[in-house]
Image (cartoon, rainbow, N blue to C red; front, side, top):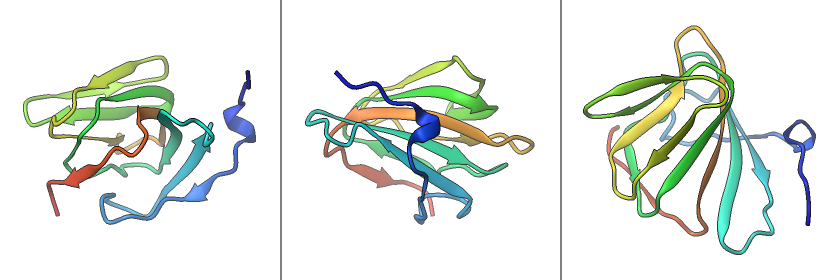
Length: 119
C-alpha cells in the first residue's frame, strides 16, 4: 500500500494545445499503477480544456477552487468534494471558472486516448 499527499507531489507544466491557456500544471499520482492514470490538474483563473472526448470513462474529483464541467447540452459549476463521471466518447470540457483557480484529480484507464474536438 502507498498513500500519497497531493501537496508533496511535484507540479510540472502541462502545456498542450488542448488548453485555452498555458496556466496549467499537472501532478502525477501513483505513476506505478498498471491499470489507471491518476493526476491532479491545476488550472489558472478561466483556463479550461477545449471540447474533447476520451475512449475511456473519466472520473473528476474536485479538490480546490470553483470550476465548470460541460457538455454540449449543459454546464455544471463544481466545487471541492464534487465528483463528475464522464462516459467514454462524450464530448465535454472542464476547467476553472473565470474568477477562480481550480484543481481536480482525474482518473481514467491507462493508455486512454483523447480526441480534441475544438480548435
